[in-house]
Amino acid sequence: MPERIRTIVADDHYLVREGTRRLLETSGEVLVVGAVGNADELVDATRRLGPDVVITDIRMPGGDWRQGFEGIDAAHRVHADHPGVGVVVLSQFSDALFAFELFKHGTEGFAYLLKDRVGDLDELLGAIRAVASGGSVIDPKVVEGLLARRDVRGEQEALTPRERDVLREMAHGRSNGAIARALHLSVSSVEKNVNSIFAKLGLENSGDVHRRVAAVLAYLGPGREAGPGA
Image (cartoon, rainbow, N blue to C red):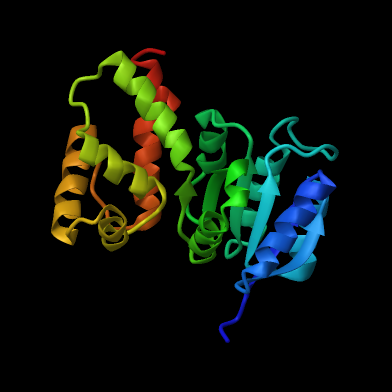
């Protein structure tokens, strides 16, 4: 049997923490080596237990952390001290501000998912696998909301419906081949759409998965939304 992904779960709500732990362990792919209730305990458990991935809530009480950003700050501390450890941040907030805060120092090895993804084991496992291998994931609902706001503003060079679909899949951290399978397209068709997206957004194309997610964030970021001089 392949070695299971060693994981720590951090959430200040006991039922959520234990529910996530039990759900993951039913998959057979994940071994939960620790379950903790705050950011300090997460940092300490990561040092002691050497996980492959940590999963953390975005807000947890206690400790010398920014209020409301405890999980994100702990994620950055974990990644700085243990660069090989992937981080999945679970949040109830679809506001992209929190995603940008998580990814502000780089995207490699980070995922930002909404908490309702916990009930979708395949989605959660996909994010765990991605960050364990250095990839990145941003919840497609966050991307969808930002794209919808852009549509209302009626931007020029709007993406076609197919390009929007491809952009969402890119936000999942998927390769061109994986996007082709998900959308039932040929790889060459996906490549054309990816090239068109990057051309319209004025972004450099890259085959590197986490850089593709970074490009999505760069386009959807607060700076672009606010406009020049904001």
